[in-house]
Length: 407
Image (tube, rainbow, N blue to C red; front, side, top):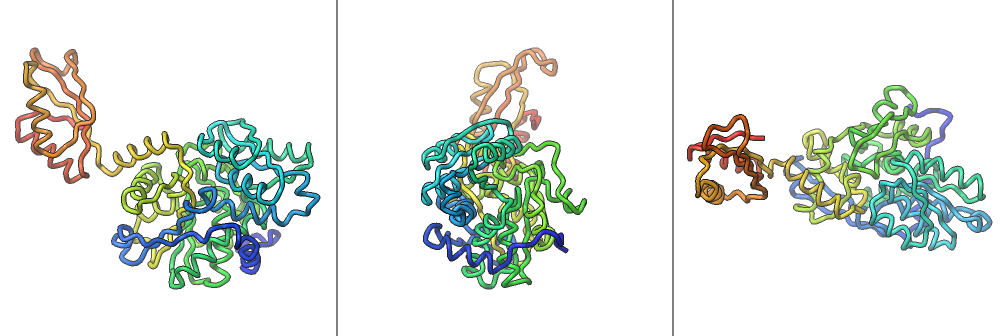
């Protein structure tokens, strides 16, 4: 049951927010995923908030909150703390509503998110390695200057604005049985659950967190918000050490299940979205898809997975794609002992080419203790078509007489 002293956002609150932001936000598409549907055994749809203005759902809550300030409050300006997506939402909403915006961001914030936030007209202050320090600094700025603090998830207006995603899901997929959505501080899943449960209490709402930044399981076990001591995840957008009392009350009272996904799950899901759905998604934004890929039979179809954001640093995208390919068995690292004579490497490469493996890296070693006189060890990193192809490549090398040691 929800915590009695914390009133929850109602379905009517979300509907009012939808009226307010109707001419500002995009009604993002719901795209069917055949690849996920085949795994689940029924329809699976992706709610593409990565195609929203500013590249994530955050504009919904930020605009709702700032639009409901008085003229005097807006004249004092607004301040926020964010790893990037909320920053962009606040910056754009403030510009549209004629308010100045200051945003505190961690030093680890991705460069594209920084550039976009500046482009929307906000002043940026950077400090700390996680969202914890910027949140404190933003609150102090508000106290010092009189600016209104726009919290990323700890306000009913923000939660109601984010919940408009849920209304769209119900309208676009009336037969939905399960909705999966990422959770960091919990504002999106709180609002979505409030919207969905008010109209369709039978729909199962599942929150998904990165397992290395998952504050909700421990908080639910304790019956109150509990802060994590440390976090380590590529999904910076949901790396929040503690839910607020308000968002926690919604999760406790309205969300049916909380799941966690590994870094490998996130990488694999990001690669899936790129290759199969043709969508650019950041690691936090792909958490719901990661949960479906990790355990597809756990969710009753029709399923809607909310793809919550697409603001990813190209450098990180490259690393995550490589990580995702490794997690999917598309990279194969081997070490082989061959005679140290002309033509040995050429023969090995010809064998690999015949098997359809693409060689990415080659390394020679002549001084290893495992090597006999007149031997050389060759390390290769190969790109394959998947685990079955990798097994075929290794089997072909063994048949050709090579001593193969997988790494």
